[in-house]
Structures are given as structure tokens and as C-alpha cells.
View 1 (cartoon, rainbow, N blue to C red):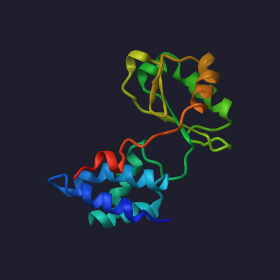
View 2 (cartoon, rainbow, N blue to C red):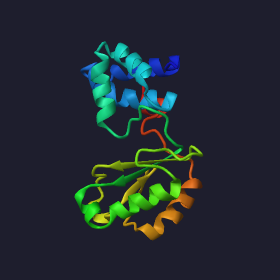
View 3 (cartoon, helix red, strand yellow):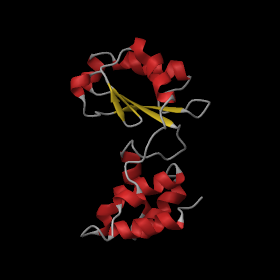
View 4 (cartoon, rainbow, N blue to C red):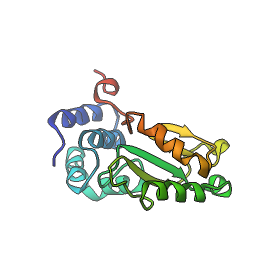
Length: 172
């Protein structure tokens, strides 16, 4: 598995948009993930090489943020907020019901490859607690009774989009 030549060139071009090329690491990781689907060790090593940095530094970023995936994930990503506001209002039950319905453990991917459920730290919508991020949509407040309809609605959607696109975000 390797990053495509088109993505490598986009990453190199992206580096020129910042005073320090290292500042382009997070958007570069988004590009690599959009290209390959996830960021296994060999892809992280390629990115490190493009930045002339130690692969451990890339892994530190990848493993810190739950927007990056070190193993394959489902077409739909469901982040269930586990921060205080959401937990106090029932997020535990919502997470448990979501996992039970999809037949997964937290951080797991459904057998059909359609859903990955990730308990996440604050998703920044405490006014909608308990809430979740389904692909790129903020959903909340939610409760356990809504889980079936949330899953059914997500199945109709195109899936988890990359926050950065080569053509749209890397201008001349």
C-alpha cells in the first residue's frame, strides 16, 4: 500500500502554502487518508519521509486525533460524544444502544463494513447534549430511541467525507 503520486504531489504543494512545511502535516494526513482510506504504519512512514521528520512524530499526531484511523473503518463514522455534558444527559446509553444495534464494541466496525462507532471527547456542541457526529452531520440532542432512525438515515447518505480535497483546497 502506497500513497498515490497525485497525493504525494498535492502534499508537496501544500507544504509550500505554509511558512514551515511541518505546519501542513494535519491537512497532509487528511489527504493521505482520503487517498488510502486509513493511515497504517507504512503510509505514516511515507508522510514522514515527505516532511523529513521522524515517523514517530507522525504517529503521535495520528494516534492523538480520532479523526485519523490506523486501521480500516466503515463507510459511515459515528462519533458519540463522551464528555461531561453529554454523559450527564445519557450518552452512555446512546453509545451502548448504537454499538448493540450495529453489533460492535466501541471503536469497532460493523460486519457489513458500513459503520464504525467511536466514543469521542468533546465534539463541540454541548448545547445539543447528548450529541453525536454522524459522518459530517451534528445530530442532537439524541436518545436511545432515536438510534434506529439515525442508522437508517445514515445509510441513505454518501458516507464519511474528507475535510480536505486536493482540487478544492490546494490552489495555485
